[in-house]
Image (cartoon, rainbow, N blue to C red):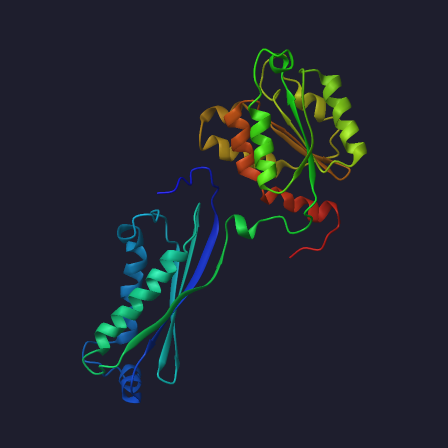
Length: 303
């Protein structure tokens, strides 16, 4: 199965359909009047569909087992056609499109099985996904395509050439995946005055996102939060909480990080951990959904 451990839980929803077409009006009458020999077609087929939804990962090898938290199966009769819709909801890391399509398919197959003794012309048509929402595609940046960012690595050892930077490069990779242009990338020592000077300079240039990596721990040289907090005009605690919550699900040491998130004028300023995994996980926790902030900061219209 595909690795989804880097993803965050979101509300996922999908609706699929299947159409059962019978060959005579008497079949529809028998269904509506509960005269089908095998029993109540709608009730039994719904029960079969519910079981089918739950069994999806057992039958399709690449489907992840996930918590099904809501299933609705509905019918609409139009002439000789019965349209089945199956809607699934979950709060998880991956979507439920296949579960919805599988549920609709099983409902249709059960109806076929129940109706074949009285109608030899039953057909199943148009099994397809109607709609889905949730996940990355529902939280992408819809406001501006030309955001830019500065990435600053705060590290005495890396600035002295004693160690290679990997955290900053991981941040850049995620920014590029989110269609954010990199205006500047540099390494500086853990110096409060230098951090503040760089921040003020980027804000004056109108840089959209300024991301510091490093200096968020508890050693005496970890001063990034102390440098940024006097400059930040409005903190965004939810971003900090999302970063730590995501990290805490992966390592208990995340509780020791002092990540910072806030705005200065119309610039979003972030201070992330200096370890490669810490920086990467922090970016995964908040991007691309954090870009929603620019619909507010820039006064753009949004859904």
